[in-house]
Length: 225
Image (tube, rainbow, N blue to C red):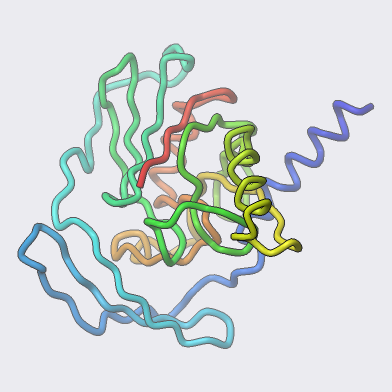
């Protein structure tokens, strides 16, 4: 009974990630320029709920590997040999199989992608080593892969920050962080690098569906700044 209850709770968490955020709409690019260092500086506006949000995005103009499709058969690969590298600076999720990169997908995060998660509500994506804890094929955002955040490392860091007074006494560590897709017609948000999530990692639906088939519960995920 206890195991069934824990699995039920895990599925609920997977389905409710980013639940407080209505899908952004009316995306508009205000300005776009190159910074001379290989990056694009883009200012966008979009409506989220009752708010009109203005966001500045700094992302690489070119990322090696985008669109890479090394032939693989999801049903026959050894999923224990799959590793995901989430590079927040490159807005990218790279898939490695037996230490060889086989896929690279465009990804977006929260509004401050280079910030490490420190507590619930900061909308930041945690950094470090994690594992896929659960897979939900029927998520609000197409498919959802729950990460085991907070893990021991994240809990230790959180407790130290709280003990030092860096975080308020009422702060909570948060959870329900994962990798998921986007609402139908939302691919432009991914393409433009818009940071709309609560700290989850969002991909285009065609990419999340492919990735979902390549990984299993226990697949290692490394998230870097």
